[in-house]
Length: 68
Image (cartoon, rainbow, N blue to C red):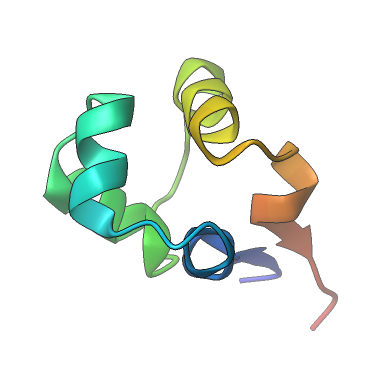
């Protein structure tokens, strides 16, 4: 898939664990894990907004497009 999810990179930069992000964004660990591993088929704008707010970043810091 040409969309790369860099959630783990942003979490590392902010020194935040998946558990901590899960609590702050109010998402289950399994849903965040699916997103983090790039297995998600979609993401709601409200979820993306919450993640960006907590990690103090832009959507482009988390999602990246690469041609095959």
